[in-house]
Image (tube, rainbow, N blue to C red):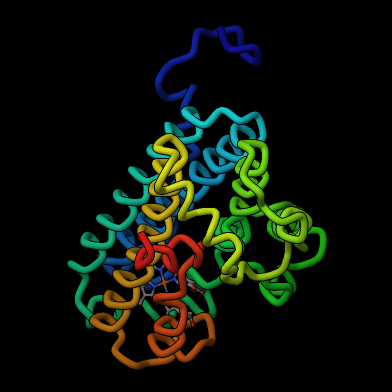
Length: 266
Ligand code: HEM
């Protein structure tokens, strides 16, 4: 029974289908046929971002509780969602440049660049920027969430603390690292990770899931920029950046550089 009305929940009432279906509001005159796809795909991405953040928060808690197998289980779910998110770009690539241009000017400055949930995921993974926070109005939901995540430990910090509790000699300077600083490569940590890979199958497997995650995010960035290139070429982005040139700079930067650096030593 629903608490509000006393009536039994239905599919429609439980999922708020009426509200959900009222949220796709094209701005183009007509409206242009392809704008519906453009809106829906972005909304679907925002829902997946929400679910990813929900799962990442669980990964962080489970790492702090030393529940290694549950961490792996949740990471597996995250990786599966990431694969679906990459695959979804295929749908948008059925939209030709002319079809996109038919409504692009109605987007004004709107761009995925302004997705606070995407930035929240980046922050959690250690890619933090105060500039990204300042783009959102003070007191807004987006800014409050980003400010909180800016001050919170990253996934890498939680992983290092876990490794330390697993009796690896993670240097105190790494355990007390400023959580808003970039994750730089560390030869000391690399030595420890080589030991993990050689002698500790449980935690080596966990490292592999983190590499999967890193590769998955890079895969999304690569596929997104290719889609951008085929749809708008070298035009500037609606978010105000140089467009594909800016996006290219974000590709190939690993999230967990130490996990890549050790590959040639294994
Ligand atoms: C026709 C489709 C698309 C085009 C042409 C496009 C274009 C762009 C461009 C040019 C940028 C650079 C920033 C700027 O706007 O100046 C950008 C950034 C971004 N876009 Fe898209 N995009 C498209 C679809 C999507 C979709 C479906 C998503 C899913 C949420 C998305 C998410 C993002 C994100 C998160 C960024 C920020 C990336 C970063 O700063 O590293 N985009 N997009």
